Image (cartoon, rainbow, N blue to C red; front, side, top):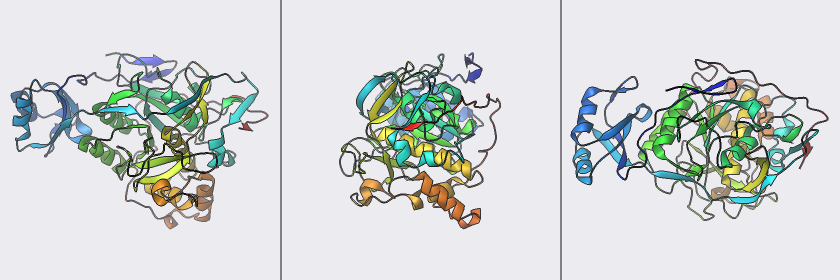
Length: 429
């Protein structure tokens, strides 16, 4: 299979695998079943004995995704002592979000906007010191508009798990909007993202309808590990838990990756969806310009932070801009804030970065803990806390994650980010 080239960047190909069959299942094994990336022969034989076809490895979680011809085969396999779990390859989808304006045309040059949310979290206050340069942020979504003038300078690579023979071009608009909030380029045009120097990785796991499958997400997370991605943004979910997806998130966070996930747009209590509900993920709710909880924002004890999520202006597809509302938009603010902060203290571990964000969050008096978690993310206040604790050992991590290989590059390198002239400067929305 050939790699797809986007400009000077190579986009890795992936194998297609079973996802549409009625009996598509994810199988997890109790004992180590892989030699490297290859499933051991005895496990292949076990699966074939029970009628499994189109078997594809998911080595990150010590499992496979495959199809079965009948329920009889499934029941027999489930009784085998080597099987830890057998679950449906669940469908995931974008959270419903409000489109306020899909096609906004901004002046071509000489005018750049700082969206209200970027200013509210204090990101613009830190740009004289840091723009998130060098940080790797993967957006697992509908892809990214690879040619958008406010995004293309920062796109460092990507992969398409929906149609592996194609580049990860956004055919929905959601992924591009999220990406702009994270890292739209500081280029005297359009909008500026929270971390305008970060590297974006377009990881397409959702189709043009915003739908995908858990197995795609698991393979995407494994790909992110291979690329030494530091921050992963997830803005989709399901109300059904998945042991397989949970194990994938446990694996990547244990290796030092930070996973930021949208809480969901159900607008009720005890309604945080998966994967945001997993303790290893950073579940993000949404607030409006008056610091009120957005009417659609899911609530529950799993919420870690809130961020701006209503009327968010960002990049769309086709080179235009759009204004959307949803917890997806809030999640992007947190991902961008993490990238910005981590650049200022690159030797800190993931847990230390998160502890600093939680400890510096702004508590909103009108919101309960299940509505806001630690509070509104304030990356400017987090940076002050870093400066106050100038010695890294004084910052105690919230969790015991370790970060390995984050400063390493993958086997191939990408051109460095180049900024366009930036005068007289962006204007607050």
